[in-house]
Amino acid sequence: PAATGIVIGIAIAASYLIVLAAWSQLSVVAEDLPAYTARVGDLWSKANDRLDELEKRGIELVVPKTLREESQQIQQRPQQVLKSRRRRGTVSAPITPPAPPLVQEVRIHRDANSFLATIYGYVAGYLHVLVMASFVPFLVYFMLSWRDHINKSILRLFHSEERYIVGKTWSGIGDSTRAYMLGNFLLWVFLSSLSGLAFFFLGVPYWIIVGPLSGFFSLLPYVGLPLSIVPPVLAAVAISNRVELILTVVVVTAVLHFLAMNVLYAKVIGRRVRLNPLVVTIAVMFWGLLWGGIGLILAVPITAAIKTVCDNVESLEPYGKLLGD
Image 1 (tube, rainbow, N blue to C red):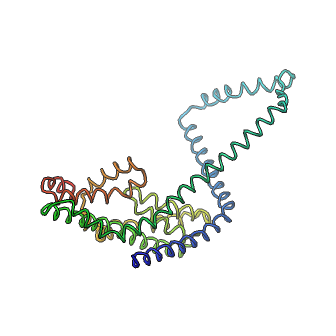
Image 2 (tube, one colour):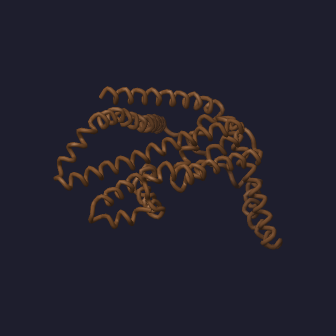
Image 3 (tube, rainbow, N blue to C red):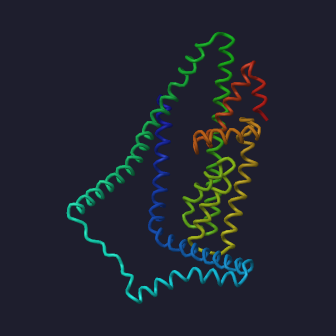
């Protein structure tokens, strides 16, 4: 219990320091957000203008000139009729009578209620997350400190030969889950460090936040590469619209992703998990459909645990071989 408390205390202190560093960076991002939003808006408007020009050129190439002139005349006829009526004075702007005082009070009351309901809904979501997160340290503490007791109690539920099978399965599930979680954490630290250093030397702003965020997205199965490219590209667009810088950021992120997922992932995690790619793909689709983003993260350890059970139960060994590599 004492060792568990010390480890959890160190983890809470480290989490506090990480959150503090991220909060300081987020405050800088909040200060630069108006300028960044204006720049992104300018780039977006320029891109829309270019798309409009390409669309007009495509229409000019495909549609004959006579048809374009006829369509323009048809579109301009209602506007011409409206202008002529306004000149004659037959069309006037509608006049809305002022609302009675009672109606105005009801509207003000409704606006106040909607405003309070919006604030409550916004705060209630965060309070729910904070309340649930407050249970995590206690849950981890009791799971670690009572691990041996739970292990022995579960084994006592079975008889001699079954007890051996259950114990082997239990340890196999623990090894595969531990290898998956620890391996992903080490890969995230590795990718975050290399990505942050690379973005720092490339001059990408907010590299302390962008590096870990890109590394985390890179570990997601199958959708990691496009998602990991988005944060550094958005940060690079904030300071420059040079194509060379953006392409360099994309290439660096893609190289780090392929290095981690094709070389390091197989050595750190693949040897313990040993699932074939088809099963991993189906598992990711199934658990992602069932649980969303959490399902994408937990799909591999859950499937590896099922494979471990099948490998240690004689009647289920064919299914374990079907799931294996």
